[in-house]
Image (cartoon, rainbow, N blue to C red; front, side):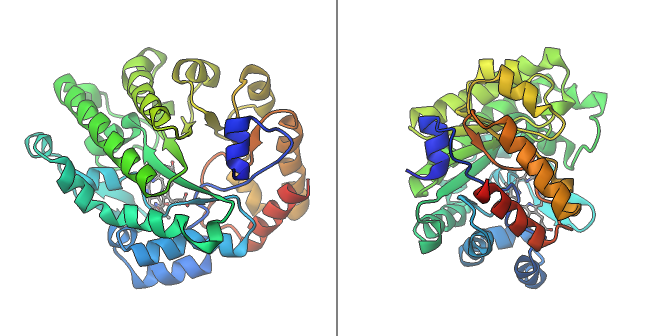
Length: 333
Ligand code: CP3
């Protein structure tokens, strides 16, 4: 069993495995080199030779315990024939969403459109660089995908009130997402993903009263499905106000926390394995400060099953040497 599985499945608390969200990305010059030659981000994700190479890039540099596949949560709307493009300095832009067309998409058609993602997972999980490491697959949570599908771009700070206007449409989209997210999860697992992480990046935008319908019910459906396939699931409801309630309702195998929450409070309140938390901006400070803050998290979770990670993705302006120092600090703890 890999160290991350030891923590999640066997609740081991005396080891400190580490992986980093967005560990394969723009802070690495070797990624930027490939990216420069491949301006179409979706096409790059669908090139399994390059996307598997990108996935493995950070593992060749640092002693990380997991490979997270190089893909994107927006590959799902892409698989449902909504156009997705990534504009520099703007972020993702999605096309119109045609409910009639999407309601008619067949499973085979969807799986065929995303087949390169599954090939990439096979390549990564069979690679010599992932020996005794975990291959992590992922999906966006239904709520966060709903936000992108309807809003058609990142919402930044809030959603327009009219976002919630068409309840019929929202209900239909959530049902379609439930179906295809399960298909996407199943195919990732069949290709070699050993853990699934569910990213709910916009969980913090909802009011408490809206959580059951938009987050709890649809996420629980995916978590139970993944568990039924005997694969652990990590949830990351970024910005949610009450992690304790979330864990009690959703019961993920592990919970990934963001950098706004107090880790000491989490370690007291929550008794499932915890992942992440440290502010990615700390990698932009100096080594002394980075070591101090890293040690703070490791101390707090000393007797708790804990996977080191950040509270959001590593920032593009991060110096790879600082990443190296972070990984060594965790390994030497
Ligand atoms: O290393 C990894 O973590 C795996 C790869 C990964 C990517 N996206 C690659 C990527 C993962 C796990 C994601 C998840 C994802 N994608 C989320 C959830 C996590 C989060 O960040 O909250 C979300 C919301 C998205 C949607 C998305 N994709 C946005 C908002 C953007 C643009 C933002 C930006 O950084 O410019 C992307 C693009 C994207 N996805 C990049 C990468 C490496 C940058 C593409 C580039 O090189 O320009």
